[in-house]
Image 1: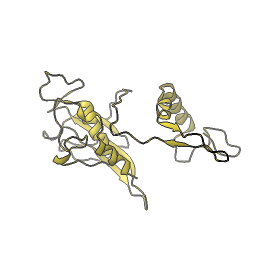
Image 2 (image 1 turned 45 degrees about the vertical axis):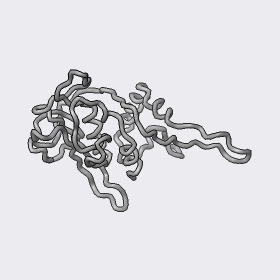
Image 3 (image 1 turned 120 degrees about the vertical axis):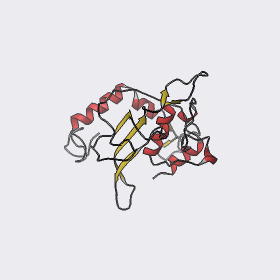
Image 4 (image 1 turned 90 degrees about the horizontal axis):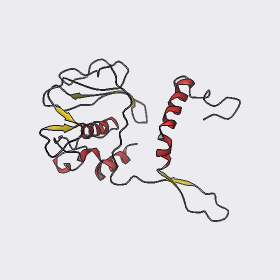
Length: 204
């Protein structure tokens, strides 16, 4: 990663990036976890070009169903900037997923802070996602004996959709991850449906 000229790699980052040591640290961590190998697996080399034409690469399109993926990194003591009425409070500059008290009819919620950018999509500055662990039971492994527990990965995937700009969907889309109501004891929303994928593709 570098610019033409005399600048050394990792020292030529845009001015609004963190220090180059921090960026390199993230890069090394992701590389060690195989993140880049996973990403490059979604690219394919195009068929051999005719003589005189340069070969090129193209991105593969997303399939209609996306497999679930999860990688736990660490815990946090930072709390989401959302009160017990599920309303936003003053932002602290840190995006946080946590558990706590929300309105008892709310399973989880997403609140975001954005800045307008003329002629472009708003600049996302912070997102907080609290789960209602006071009134709702969550599980990571719904089984046939599950009773009124919500799959935390399904709920998390739904809330992540809001982070990327997807809205809740009505009853005619109850087969999709972004359906407005959460169903207990089901893992179906861990995997995006075709409508969810098309919605993501439409976001500029």
